[in-house]
Length: 380
Image 1 (spheres, rainbow, N blue to C red):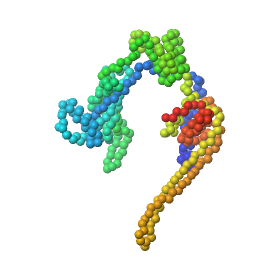
Image 2 (tube, rainbow, N blue to C red; image 1 turned 90 degrees about the vertical axis):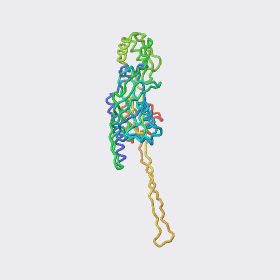
Image 3 (cartoon, helix red, strand yellow; image 1 turned 45 degrees about the vertical axis):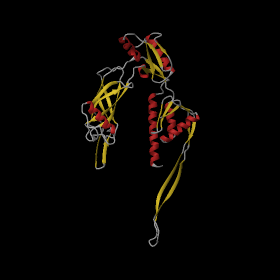
Image 4 (cartoon, rainbow, N blue to C red; image 1 turned 30 degrees about the horizontal axis):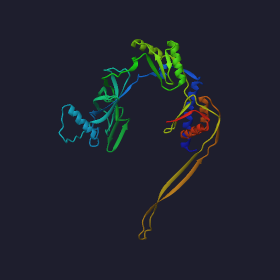
């Protein structure tokens, strides 16, 4: 057997053995497991907001944008200098290599107040070779409503490093993006519906009618009958105290209530790009017979040069191609997979196939189509 096929088969077996070990640790978990409400739900309206801004990074060591190819960098510099009272003569051709145009992004957490510091991410827009050693100039950060909620400025921290000389270049990690820890200051608070009305609404991270009913029942048992009502498979409405102090304390107790959450629907996640396959504990398998073989076609083309004899007249050298086509089919034996209702049993069954990761994707899809695999396939 070729070394490449043996290594690929070994990877599959190691991957499935890891899944088997995980299944053994689960120990045949019951149909429900205890979780806290805060682990499976969030309070409606209590969420972060995304901020974005456009700015300039200065102080680069000749690694900035090539201004002839990024005219927006030159326009930004001229506009910034104009705001500082420096008017450039018309037609001035700036050739700067220490400046880079960047996009600045940040996340404004819920209940953020003016004066709070935020970390910001700075990413190059043009053709700057590196942002290492640069300083972000004062940049307004706007929300989706185009209002300014924070101002960012500071020295960049870039995790990468790189050097180039004589056409050769060595680089470690990424040089076109960096962070400014605590580089933004919140200037405006976002209105929050946390104290509005007599009710709070909890939103489950995943729609599940059984879990929604269990959450409402748990709250009613702990906080009093009629305190909570499941509106649908995702939203639970909860009556909350009126004062802010009581409401915060009430929500703190509510979030830590244990819930016997329903086991998620049987699902297999397949990443077609990397060949990764992940199964959850609800996956089951019915008896099925599987045969799988590989068909490979190899075409090798070799150039053949034909030259005229030394005494011939008018002859020309001609280059032709000779192709060698090989077709190989690896035989696949029929494997009988027994029924399995536990993840460990399913992993054992798949391990007997000895297929490569890419082959396993096709096998799982075929098993699903035949009705032997009790799980939803999700390809990402």
